[in-house]
Length: 396
Image 1 (cartoon, helix red, strand yellow):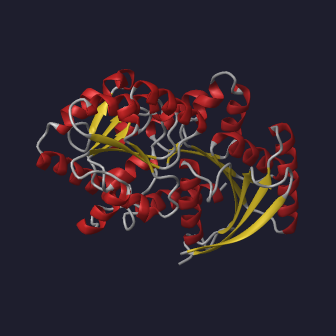
Image 2 (cartoon, rainbow, N blue to C red):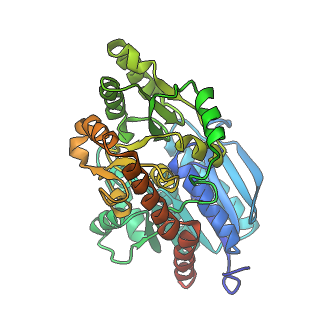
Image 3 (cartoon, rainbow, N blue to C red):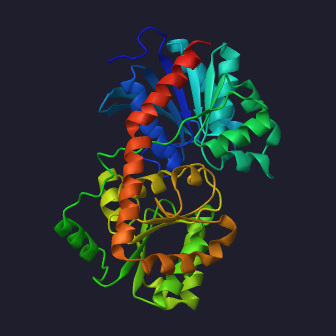
């Protein structure tokens, strides 16, 4: 059903990352573009690639369950001052071939800046989405505060991933029309209904012993996600009971260096860090999440992390920092446990306290978390918000 059939509906969607790239920006871009296609838009995606020659352009036709879209990948130069002018050349070519009616920039720099500048040049409405640490990265040195303010001031519409992020954007831009577009979760993929034998086999294949407590983390292991606190927590929990840290995703080179240093001081704990590598299949991610006795999200700053919502959808008992929009989705003691981001050095104590609770109590917390995601953060809820956002954009 074409929900926007009465409006011009050719949309340019710009995102720094897009599948098969990893990370929250890529995953949310994938989910949003699928919803946009389902809403009846003709969609062109532009993203950048480190795997192409500088300036090279590659077009792909991507099939989604709702229809097809075109993805244009532009090879990065070493510096943005070369990449961005060339990107505008590519956008001119695409627009001349078949004009766009609106432009969406996903993440404030570079995508949203390019989207707003191109839209200004062509007289088009623009929408930008603030995702996570993109505000902080641009606000503080070596970020470009002037470019951040210009982008927010000139965008036709602004969507923020959480109320916390919306408030930051309002303070920066003095605009009161910032709308919240929460992340959504595909609950057909992320759930707790996996056959016990299947999970037991997966656990065995990962080398996790039957008696080990599984501390879980999903995504790219890096500084902003609290990697130091995760490692410290593993060492502390191991002093009390057998435990491993299951990293469902990849480890950045900087984090790998930290792990190597950690191994020198805590060889036994380091030996029980289980890293899956990137899992492109969401159902595989969900199966691994279902192995976790406690899921940990000790972020230093955040928007509204996809990984935490997915762990909650899988009915895991979660402990998270109070960064960004996390308190908007988690009520401490009811749907998980919140730890002040200034107190993350106590994460190990919080985990041991959580594990001391009766299993039935932890399971009940997980069930309430799953019910919350299904009722408030489903794809249907996200699409309802998305539809209202687009209708406002096309009325401009």
